[in-house]
Image 1 (cartoon, rainbow, N blue to C red):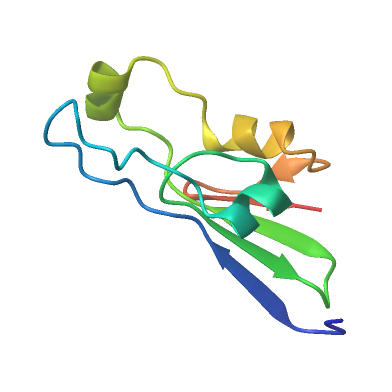
Image 2 (cartoon, rainbow, N blue to C red; image 1 turned 90 degrees about the vertical axis):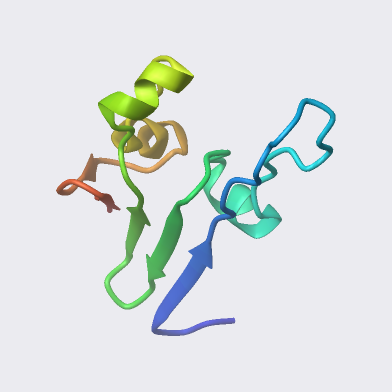
Length: 97
């Protein structure tokens, strides 16, 4: 049991897909997925035990990325869906109480 400090849970990065038969599709890290329920690449999740806070780090999709992927939810929407109580924060991070 962890009594104090910070816990860092890094999510996985995307796997390159050079052709359609590539078997390496994106799969989120199991621990990250278990604690957040978020299946999105390039995120980090920090649990601050001393201050009872959870911080989700990542970037919202850019206009250029949206052209290729279509509409994708923002980081705040993913944080709210993961069951966090009041997501807030600046660009690139969402602090959840």
